[in-house]
Length: 101
Image (cartoon, rainbow, N blue to C red):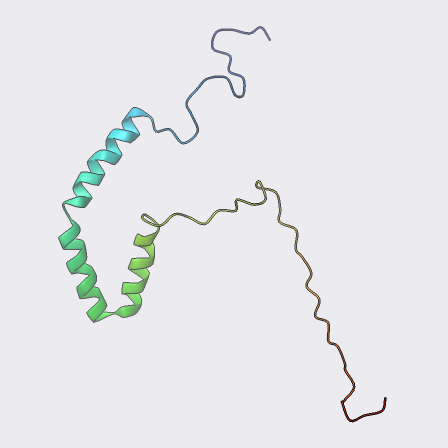
């Protein structure tokens, strides 16, 4: 196949990994403004939920945490399967101090 000006090869140009397109960026900015305007209402709703049903309160909090806490990622294996390491427990038997063994 002949190369054209629209043929892309890995590592050559294009949108950087994780970059947002213009529409997504604008939508996130609008949603952020709306949510910041609702902080008092969200806080009040969580307080009310805590008083009524603590299990649902914890569930709601855990869902909200995913938006503010970074997700745990593996930075040690370069996305390769992690090899399990076996741990051996060695028990040393020492003769009693008063024994002649």
